[in-house]
Image 1 (tube, one colour):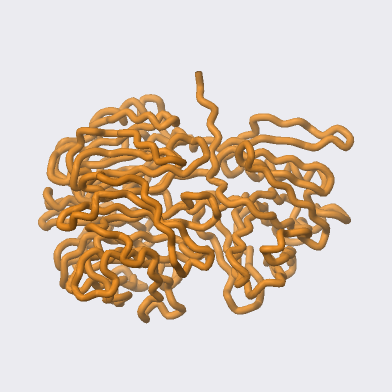
Image 2: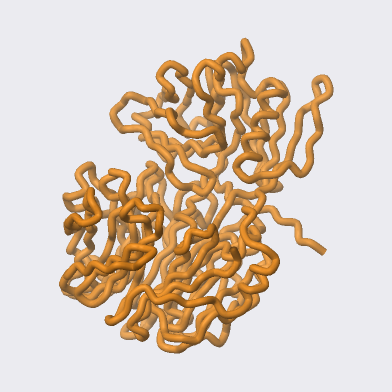
Length: 578
């Protein structure tokens, strides 16, 4: 019997906004804090009911809300939130808004949570939609009156056809044709209508939609995924600790950058020509980020200790140019993990880092997050989220809304050696102002060698669970919300120091993958959508320290990129799905 899947990536319920001049507006309060394709999260089932001037959205049973609107915008918001109105300016090709709260910044995201465009904090209260294709987007705003992460799905329109298509009076969703266009917009972004009752007289119009997994791969490809994957070596010769991918040179091919002891390596695909940047210090983690918002991905790294030096390398305008080193902070010590995500909901990427070891730092056993200043070449703005509240040797971090309050929380993991206070998985609840104190919640203790943890809905029940590994111990596990019941994924894999969660087989749920740090086993774990995982061994050659999911060969599926400290190689495993 097929399991009924209802997924709540819709995590925050607040009054929605109505765009009176935009005909296709789906009222929703959805904001998933998906980092990127790494987490493979997609929005779940939605149910839209339209009757007159009232629109009701449901993301799961008990998660319904309604809002009444008029042509001027939204009316009757809760007293804790500022009133807000939003209109479309066809002449300026932009969205304009007013609020009784403080100055507001709006951010447009696609259905995977990725920022598409943000307004400027200059008080103009305008966000350009010129050049943005039609479809459903998430629109979030945050004002000085608190986290007003109100979101809407809307179908941006182009010029006068928008106004001509809108009703002469009343809100855009008051008429059936507009509601039908909402469905069409959803369908264009990967949804299918499961049930629909066309309106009759004053009866409401109801439709339920479900995300459709992308048409990637074949039955033969899915079967081939259960066997060995072809391994390709990108680089070799030193102990690589972490690797990240992006198209750095703009040639439509994936490139790879990795860190080692005293060096950063850049390989440009598909030929994998190598450049080496000498940077003193031992490095264990890296990421990519567009730090200066110039449209080119830059590189993040951290020199581990003595003290730790967190830095970013600015990508040059030409592929052969010099990458410029910029120091972010040198106040921490023992920085083993970096994670990128939008912490404060302003639409821009922030950075999470750990300070695990004592070297005179005031941030011993702490976690911090950084906001990028207007001039990213200056030190970034540091905020403490776990103030000496992360004992043991913390490793890697995950960002996600664990308690469905609309704010991204942070999870981390720590091994015990050399401390006797580690071996735990935990998450910290974000405060309303994102500036602390953050509230710690223990997920599990006595988890020998805990290292990796990511928040994601494993069993498609609408709750955010956690997938984790014991990289200095044994095994991969997931913890089921809300009580964090442990379910073992793999009890035998030794030292799974690397972990990635992604929809590797494109069947609509998240899978996982890992490779032993010093052993030879590499495996991916196929999720059946209910949290039951089947292990598939894909290789037996070499150890790993870090793993990422990315499309290395441009065939549309996710491959696995592995940085090996024991193997002295950076490899990628070719997904046979496509």
